[in-house]
Image 1 (cartoon, rainbow over the protein chains, first blue to last red):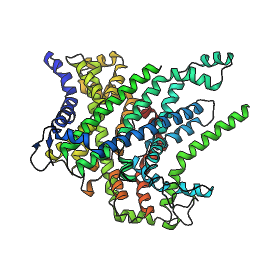
Image 2: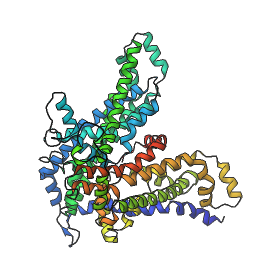
Image 3: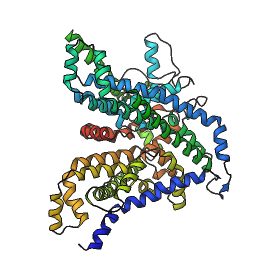
Image 4: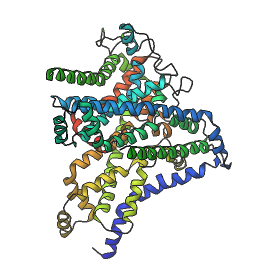
Amino acid sequence: MSKIRKKILPYFLVSPYLGHLLVFTTFPVIFSLFLTFFKWNIIGPMEWTGFSNWERLFSDRLFWQAILNTLKFLIIHIPLQIIVALALAEVLNQKIILRGFFRAAFFLPVVISGVVITMMWQQLLGFETGVINRMLVSIGLGKVGWLINPDVAMVSIAIMATWKNVGLYVILFLIGLQTVPRQYYEAADLEGATHWQKFINITVPIINPTIFMVVVLSTIGGFSLFIEPYILTQGGPLNSTLSAVLYIYKQAFEYYHMGYSATLGVFFAFLIVVVVLIQKKYIETVT
Amino acid sequence: MKLLKKILLYTILTAAALSFIYPFIWMIMASLSPEHDINSLILFPSEFTIDNYQSMISKIPIGRALFNSTFVATINTGFSLIFSSMVGYALSRMDFKGRNLIFFIIIFTMTLPFLITLIPNYILMVKFGWIDTYLSLTVPFMISAFAILMFRQAFMGLPQAIIDAARIDGCGELRIIFTILWPNIKPTIIMVGILAFMASWNEVLWPLIVIREEQLMTMPQLVTLFAVGGRAEAQIGVKLASAVFLAMPIIITYLFFQKYFIQSMATTGIKD
């Protein structure tokens, strides 16, 4: 092989990536920042508007409600996810038969499209005829307005999202739990430690990296909440399930406010990075 | 005490497993029931019917959508495997200027929230004239940072002797990658393949944005619009039939290959 060919070859191999990166990542990021200073409906000419998109963002009550809704979703979803996933992983980590079956069952919703999951739960959570309310009534309890009560609707979505994703985190925790050396538990047993003490003092510190990973993954996933409210409620009732992504989507593709929705996108992406960095700092200092 | 603990463990596990499986069974049964039977707690309908499926097929081009989804997912998976292994190979097995920089950029782009590129990418599709074409569903997804990292990792674990021997036999680098090295990293190929296929198959936000023409819609998009639009005429059974149709290919594949699914998704933590 000639020397020049040998020099060029690696660049030839990485060229598809570099081309793709330039067109679909680098340019869009720069263009996004650029767009935040323009008003544009994509068909007409672009109109320079200075900082007015940014001013509008800070006074746009609906956008801030969408951010708060998304945070509300995360505050319910993440702890619930960690508790349920850890509990199920802990149970699966015991000596049990059919472990493979249970693992596969927990994981099933993870592989199914969110569209299917949402349509299914839409029926289960229905007010008059939904299966869950019927069960509640049959054991003598009242109906719950899972999707029609503005105080409850986001909680329902958070529970549903947890149900969909928890199987993945069970597996991640299970892998983490298997790295805890048996001798630690045996030593603690000799000291007469309770189950709970062993869990808090041995298990949690060792699987801490997994906890961090789960927090970050479900934060990033949760921030992109879109299809669930899109199908279930279209952001209602009373905008209580309007997620940030759904709002950005509506601004761009229902009202064609390209400049403004790009501004929202840039701001929201920045917010995600900040939240993840804070979580990292916090989890590092706690342990 | 020991027995009590065992009983408790299995009760928890069975209850959990039921809660994950029951809704799917309910959905399949409901899609096979006449409309007035749906939403009863009883699992078995008074009579089985395929009316809902016939009605769905007459209302939306679901067969075409199945083709579109399969076609798009196959193209994306194929190209992703080819391009990502080329880059992964260069990064792990070759020494060149800028290698570390490219590696750093790959890691950096993975942390970049997709929202920052969403709107400009839509504008690109409009300007390229790719709205309502397969190009908008495939070209932006033909390479993935994550797949590159997995291939890099896999290639790093192979002995240099394989590559040297192939070079002495006069193999070019592309032939080395695809005919000599690929057979040695089958697990990685399966994992990357499953992830790429699933990501494409389940994607719904992007198709909603770039496809308006019904004949070109992917399954999740078509089913979503069917669920929120008025065409199902508020009939639950028909909507559920379309959801079952959308879920079935993955459920069946999952039944046979669940180990690979779990393995690949656990290595990434990626969700749809």
